[in-house]
Image 1 (cartoon, helix red, strand yellow):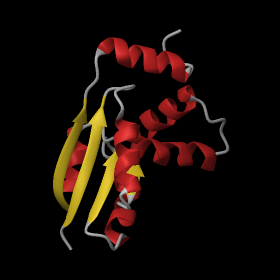
Image 2 (tube, one colour):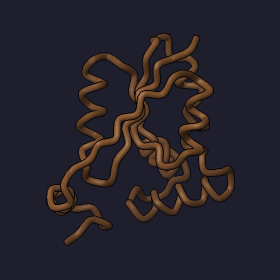
Image 3 (cartoon, one colour):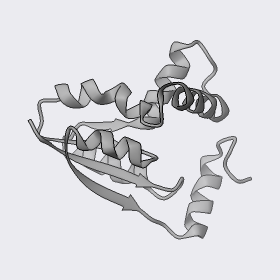
Image 4 (cartoon, one colour):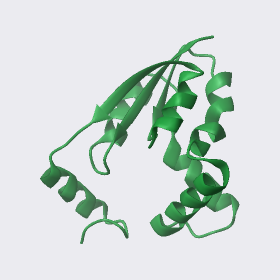
Length: 131
């Protein structure tokens, strides 16, 4: 079945998660690429930090290619019985090209003012976020 794939992308702090949560509230299955990396970190028994997640993401991309997060959820997309799914967080064109094999892409690019993003990231307080 050719699916409708809503892809949500944007810079850190732009509001991607808010958009994805609204899509999920509408009962559309939503897959977050960052969660795939978090699952891999935990599977390896490592501490879940921004640095560890970034390291594992980089390692996976170097070892398996730039589209590895999407390849890790392809089966979930295919096995979803709904006609529409959402993928939050693709970071490059290779990931979009792979998603195109599963359906039609509807790209949502979330943009926010630099100052708003900065304030959101400060409040979030992650180790890589501004202090």
